[in-house]
Picture 1 (spheres, helix red, strand yellow):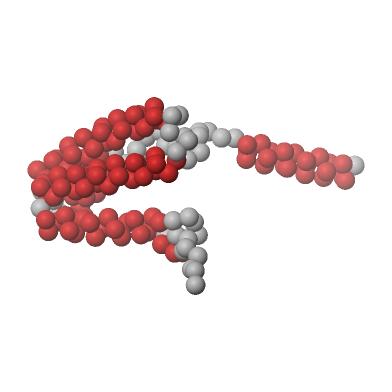
Picture 2 (cartoon, rainbow, N blue to C red; picture 1 turned 180 degrees about the vertical axis):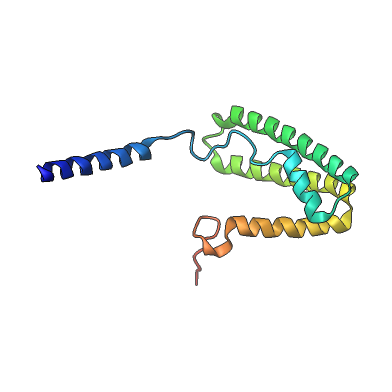
Length: 151
């Protein structure tokens, strides 16, 4: 009797763990919203760089404009996604060019608001954050893999 109860308990536990593993609340790898709002990002930047209230307001407005533009670009890219699945490398290159152009434009606008000195400081902070997020060489992955060396 004890053996049957123990086996039943083990089976129930096993089934409950597998059912919990199957639950999926959303699509993996896709976010529905930005992690940080424009206001949160501008407040963090204001604290890090000691921005004035006027600069903070302008930065927040810039971030809101960037978010709207990014959302619009993502919608366009999703429409083009089906037709471009054949040539992934061309699509990837196009997206990287668009991103680099957007970053350059955003940095130029931000520099006019906060000034060159604070912009240089912000770039250093941003680079450190990127290094932390990527984990540099500590975490294995495609971005951190070194190319095989040829002789």
